Length: 271
Image (cartoon, rainbow, N blue to C red; front, top):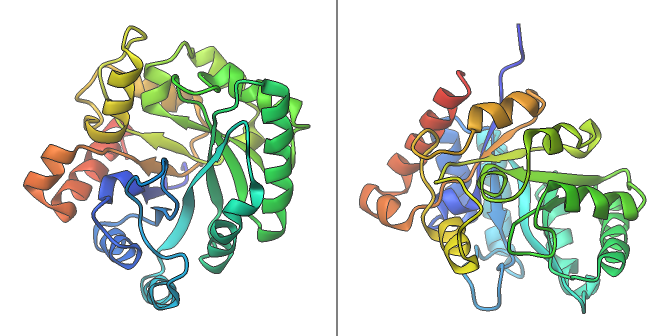
């Protein structure tokens, strides 16, 4: 019998929750872990506040102990042209305090050799914390598809804690094929993100970003080949359920929305 698949409640799915609330919600609904965004994806953008707030850290750790729900990944480190590793030191330390397993990384530097060098530096800095550096390809970034992500990781020397994060949305809206996913070495795949949308490579950058950050669909409601994608990904990697839809989640509330997202993901994967 295949092992039971593990699900993580991504930040965007429960973006109105504080870190302790996200862990409690995950425990109530049957998620094994959560993802937290403790650093914004852009200056002034939404995030969850924990860094520099020891009382929030203590409360989060207490909920972890009480519920058994873990923190899988933390967001977000962006590697741009002027990447400053020390700017993210507090995020790394928060990851260690929460026993996080992965750090979500975005590649913004179009000079690929420099991007690879800085990615290698990040992997080296994360290694003592026992955290992987999972580079997510996104069609509007300097790492637009799975081939580009693999090139960067290989140019960085394939560090032991290197990783490539496959988000179903970016698979469905980039020039990434199932063969490209198959070509990613198994040791680089630590988790994958689940959602749905209208597939295609014809969308503007603005439209792609809007969908990614505000208006994803429940698995099964769009046209991304989710079953094909997850059939070529390892069946034992955790599935991060990342279905942000501001309008629908506001109408339902955080708990019912996160429950719908988990149920739809399990239907797609026949769990």
